[in-house]
Length: 85
Image (cartoon, rainbow, N blue to C red; front, side):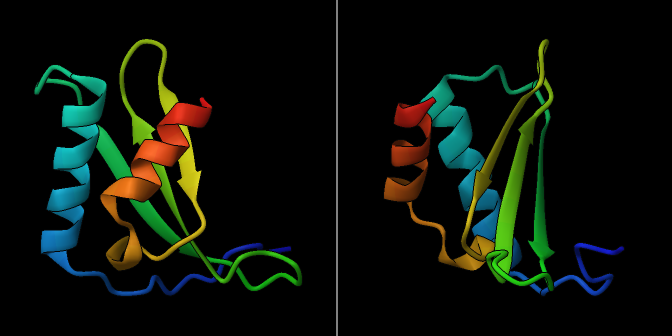
């Protein structure tokens, strides 16, 4: 069973860079720490249509998910996400 389709929705490269900048600033991360961002499209019933998965490759790694397309994520979404963690 494939939960996520193989085709990945396109995103704006500037939105990806802005998202990473916000994450570095909010978490006060060392610039040497890598951040992986993946936009996934789910085809299963009840699953959000698009979700953005964020992995901070620190020790230990930190993982977050936002149920929005990468281009639709705003600073306030990240602030809310990180406040609940």
